[in-house]
View 1 (cartoon, helix red, strand yellow):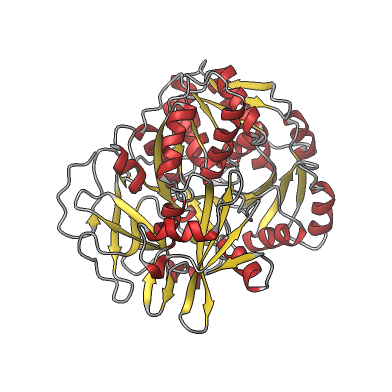
View 2 (cartoon, rainbow, N blue to C red; view 1 turned 90 degrees about the horizontal axis):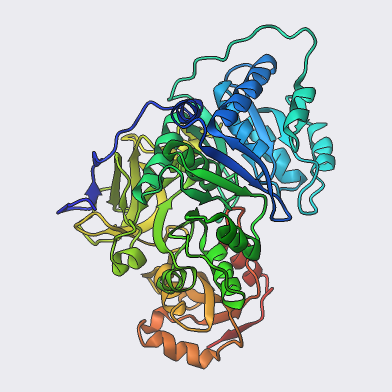
Length: 542
């Protein structure tokens, strides 16, 4: 860890790493040159069977071939959208578009017509690369309907088969072409924020940010050449196409890409392929632990689980080690920061692993600032987490107002997350600015209450938020998913009051069977609030 002795809540960029002027295409070229025969990419299809495989040399060769065809059709800097699940052609298109100097717009394959239309129009995309259908979503038909209304779209191309892509891109009498020079500061992707609090904005990310960030994350947990890394995270999200894909290329690991996340299949892959590391959100880990308890596999190869994206409670960390046999590294970040800002280390003690989100990654400035005057707060005082450095996005696409509201004149990106920092530079997140509950003038932070609830043996997942109340302004409501028979509310009140003051103890209690989730697995609290206020839940109030 960094040996810091801070007097105020700011960590200046640490020099235990170097920010390289790297590009997405350059990362693959270096991997192919240095580790040409190392297995780079392995497909796992819906039947949990190995499909196509590429060495780093083969992955570069196919990516460059595709990049040349893309360069015949599109001008450098144009935006092309990819709407597909985790298939190897997604990875090839990611590298090829970067080599061609194009900006890849990532689209959730669960999107319906209105959502697809919004992303294509807002991103100024000129092409859509997709699969015919996925999990009941008739994507070909939806695309046909949507694209008919968007004049800017010049090409719709299906990518479920690599060779078929070339047939659809073919033009008569193709000219000779050379791939463009691409600078590390140029835009490479538009990723849409996950929408836990409303409609998404498009974060315009650059080569330098996503390549360095991915390398720092995997190196912090010691993943190296020849290790097998399982990537069940969606490719349309930074966790899948940045941390996993670009991280593996830079440490020369083998990435296994399953098309869907199903816990029993994921556990089978870990056992069969001797997987050593993976990244997954807490909801995935909970289901994997349940499944492993019911039908144990030999998971002795699995040594590292990286998790984040939402709160990772202490009990879940215990269960990952006890049931899955792996150490946990917790990370924190957001799409706008390419994406990771802080991360715990495998050798951090249990308290730091479970009660903090670690120290900043190399070369990253992090400060905690007063919400009112923007000044840096003293050690251990709660404020807004702010980020400055190589990892920050260029802007929100076509949204200068939102950009200026997020990145201030000094270059600090305001995350909207509330937290504090200790004298060693370890951070804690206590909630979102918009999630903060103001009850009778007192600020309450959902994470503290959620952590207490998750200590209860019958509560598997919890989400806490504030709802309107005539007397108090807001009161606390707890949503819970339980493992078996729901505990009585009177018992839960007593359980909470052992460690929480009365005003923090939920007034309303709701038991749910499933959550409204974003594409990256985060609980959509705004959706819970809307349904609650519309009277859509059966609840118990005290």
